[in-house]
Image (cartoon, rainbow, N blue to C red; front, side, top):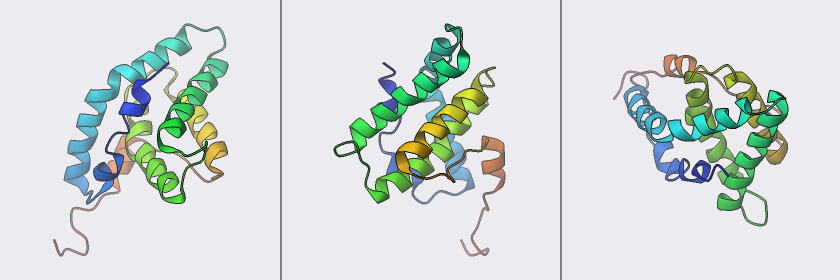
Length: 145
């Protein structure tokens, strides 16, 4: 279920390289367009259930299982994969879920965040909106390039 969760991470390292404001805008727009249907499927699953929090937990578990099965080894991620996948989620996955402005966006983000915290043993892991993240970019580093 939600097999597209694996494909949304394809090339995740290259999408994180040399990321500036303009490249982030472009990469995010492509990611959002390509993965919107997968996120909407997640919301459909949640809406179809009586207890939205339990349903969102189930989605988060499936999401994490798919990512760990694809990028992990024996259910574990390497330290570099944990870091890179976590950053990718912060830059692309969570902002996309929130950008859809679904009634269940926040609960889905909370459940994915909580599942990821547990699986990566990172209690500080969190998410933000596209607008907050985009606003934090500088065009040039120290005005040099």
